[in-house]
Image (cartoon, rainbow, N blue to C red; front, side, top):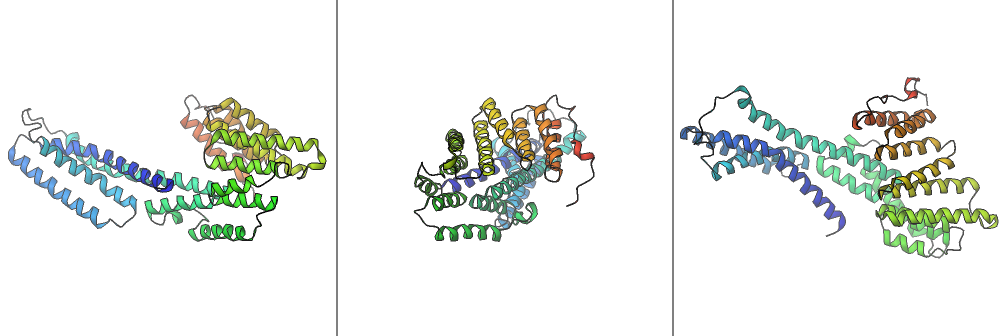
Length: 386
């Protein structure tokens, strides 16, 4: 079984398990209600449960071809009714030896609350999965990982039909297919014996999730080549996409050392000064992300701050916001809020809304941070016309 198929199967099993848990309270409540001291009432409630469970099973079979979200919505109460029948069959005299308790209003409403819970939990779970996958898909598109984005879109459509039309803006399956085909066409035209072409081939293979072919292309670039720093940076991305965090950080740092070595030998430098600075900044960000994934918070902070020192006017806001996300993830709320506000102040058009969302998350999700303002300083300014 391929890793992609195994991942999809694990996600489906997880959703089914949540549906079972969502139907458990309904099963327990209906099972105990059906176990009455009166035999006639017991038999009547048992027949009612059997009829409802049969109808729910028929409905579940009828919508078998529908998106997974609707199957989840029906399966949770179905599991509840079937569980109640199993409880009654397993111990039909569960409460027969106990004195009958008065039927309070809350006891009468308990099955309704349990049924509502069995419907709400699967729906909210599917909404949360779709929102998470849509954010990941947008990130994969920005990274140029079109094959990974396509897999996420397939998951979303499997869960909720044409989910991409609802949760995604400006991204369609046709656009993804066109981007993938463009990468394949460009690969056909690139030679296999030039350093620059090999570097471009490695990037394209990386976008197509062809990690082994990307490694082969990078291995063909000579270490003494002026493109070696760029090749090491692409290698860092390769390990990042494969979630090999230590190797990713090592490759990014190696690229930085190569760039600095080239700066001491101006004749060997292959990039303009601005391009070299931007590449070094991106390498520091990549190294910081890899260290963060390893749990090395202090080392990650050093890498991120090194990237901030190299940021220019165009990239300063983005770097501040990435650092704000890092501090939020490492529970350093004050520093996170400071960098989020700086990002919003430097580039309100792009980072005002994300910064405000991050500040609200800091206020509601971090203990002891209720004093953090929900809005950045730029929120009081009029919107910038484009």
